[in-house]
Image (cartoon, rainbow, N blue to C red):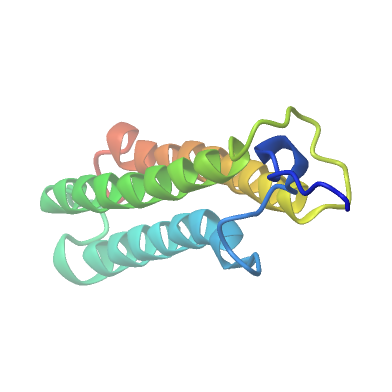
Length: 137
């Protein structure tokens, strides 16, 4: 008779939290930046064309874009945090280049983190336009 032993945790393959990884989380950060960019520039164009005139001040629009920027940065930071959690899943180290579900999970998390960082910086640069430019000219 063969003796059965209990399986040890290190004998078990690493299981990812999700059954199937999705690419949607990867595009959330850049999508938030793109919406922030679009809304900021459309709002500035409408403000300067309809409200303030060609040489008018940006005034209240600066506050609105500031609030929009804070909301966008919070969304991007949450996406980056989720990417960080995926990247640090388990006990493996970088690079995540093995063809296993756990390494794919970590790689997508790392990619999400990097794209979120890029989107964060890009959003700050879009908002800096209203910091340095005070009028519609």
